[in-house]
Amino acid sequence: MPPPFARRDWTLSPICNENNISSIQLANSGNLHVIELRAYHEGDIDKMYELPFFASKSRLPAPLPPPEVIEGSGEIIQEQSGRRVIRFSDCYVIKYGLNVSLTEGQNMLFVRETQSVPVPEIFALYSTNNETGRKVNYIIMENISGRPLDTVWTQLDSSDKVKISNQLRTHLDILRSVPAPGYFGCIGEEAL
Image (cartoon, rainbow, N blue to C red; front, side, top):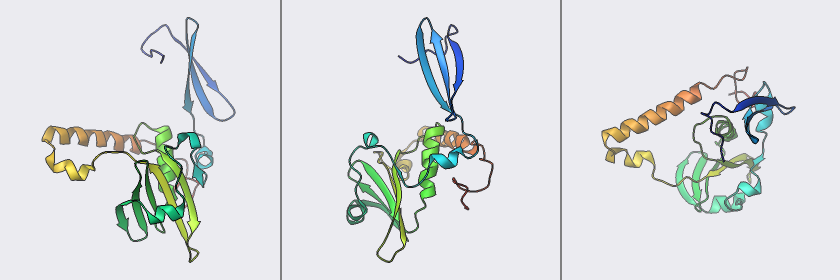
């Protein structure tokens, strides 16, 4: 049972450990709930999202397809020079190609773990070399069912459009409030 945060008879005890993971212990009449919060210190962000990244098998909705299967199948959602986005079964959306940046996936991992903004779950971030020796990057993420907003926007009434616009504004405000990590650049202190 989740703790009732609004009650005043709960006591709060902060806890920190060597992994920079902070917790809050909530106690009441013998009931104990521990809520884990992450405190990120300079340099921690860079260690958290090292590449390649693969989610644990228990998180996967299906086995991850290998690159040769990815490149030969799937419903193409979008294709541009040097990148392709496909839907692979009902489980995955996969972005891959020479012009795909794994930093996008690292940022999604960070946002999903630290912010309340909904983003697809990332299952894998990795690179392979193609037949000419050039690096092809892969971002394998959760497939979220639904219809793209641009295909239904004209069918929505003005109150729905306002609600959606307000939700998007809230999410963007949250992302804009993320503090800088102490340097100008990407995760891992890589150049932009």
